[in-house]
Amino acid sequence: MNLIAAVSKDWGIGKGNDLLFHIPKEMKFFRETTLGKVIVLGRKTLESFPGKKPLKNRTNIVLTRDAHYAAEDVLLCHSPAELLELLKQYDTADVFICGGEQIYNLLLPYCDTAYITKVDAAADAEKFMVNLDGQPDWELAEESEPLEDNGYQFTFCTYKKRTD
Image 1 (cartoon, rainbow, N blue to C red):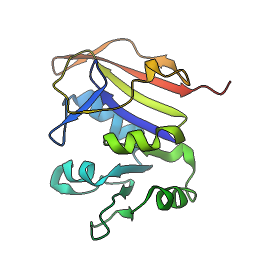
Image 2 (spheres, rainbow, N blue to C red; image 1 turned 90 degrees about the horizontal axis):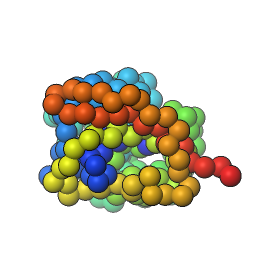
Image 3 (cartoon, rainbow, N blue to C red; image 1 turned 90 degrees about the vertical axis):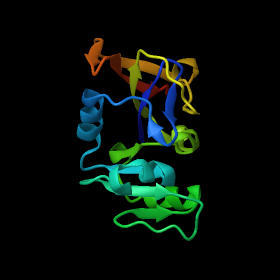
């Protein structure tokens, strides 16, 4: 499985159920990378999308503990075990974990690739993901040249889980 996220200097990912940064080039990368794929997200992340609607042209799978939660055009799972069972029907290369904080932390051990947009900016984040630079079982495999958009400098990084 894959993980995809944009992070601040201290690996912050969100505040107030919203992204920390609005960077069109980063949004384009996310869109192009996940189009036609399976995305896994939490209920709060789904509710942060425009109109609280799932992303188009993707299979949206929402993990929520709320047994009464209902949403249109998504597949719902109510436990990690149920989610992992559902994901068996998909090619793991086509599955992208999209947040938020609890979902990233829960599913990181099942991922072998992480697409991280590192934004060279501090942010007043409330939600964070694990700093992969500090994890001995992850290594930086690729990093783009520094880019700039909407007043932010950033790089696209690909991390791979070590297999040795």
